[in-house]
Amino acid sequence: LETSTPVIMVHSTDDCINGGIAAEGLALEDAPIVGEWRHVEKILTISRGTSGLSIRVESSLPALKMDRVEDTRWKAIQSSSSEPEYEVAFDGKNTLRLQKGAANFFAHRVMQTKTLAGKWETTSGTKRFEIAHVSGSLQLRAEGRGALRLLRRGLLEWEARTEDEDEVVYVLEHTEGTDRVAIKRPDGPDGGKVMLEVRRVGSSNGGSGGLESASRPPSTAATPQEERGSSRRERDRSRRGSRSRDGERK
Image (cartoon, rainbow, N blue to C red):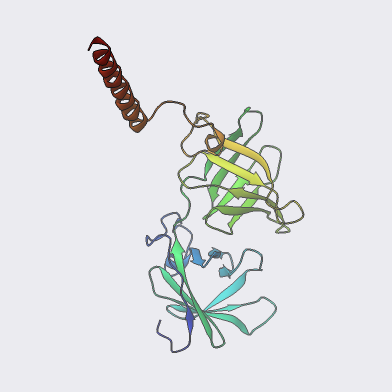
């Protein structure tokens, strides 16, 4: 992946090969490139459907069809054009190089979330939904409503989109390893405003790293340093009192 033209370098958040993608149903040669990739703050997504591989360079842009040129090189093409938007080269492990004209940039693989999937509920338990792996991607399912496909747009954010019109309905914020999800309004006048906070079904209110735990008042218990300081002050007062009594006796 050498190039003589200027490049924009990015840093991987995880050098591990994505373990969340099931190889079943994928062509063997395509499976290693399927996944999520990071360039600066943006997430690129490569997926495989019935028509082959596609890539989203940004969540807000339409997917581009990927046509293989060589074993580790593809052309990313819009459905309405035969001219490639990008040339995509893959090192076979954790790095992509995308080239558009004379400009290049690199993207590095990020590990898929392992803790967003599961059953979730409001703190009152009145509303519940499930996030599940379906055909290599995540879907949000709620009783009586159509499934929403989740598309990652940042390290901590996923867009919940309708399957038919690809409309963004919600934005989910989740920190890996925690039992909390914040559901926000999509981009717009109220974009970013938290509508609802949910917890994993079966988790306690004090789950690790939860959104609710962030708003709890700090503990009033003394720290070890405070206890040692208090003991020293008591000893000083005791010595001063002893010297005062000795002076009175003299």
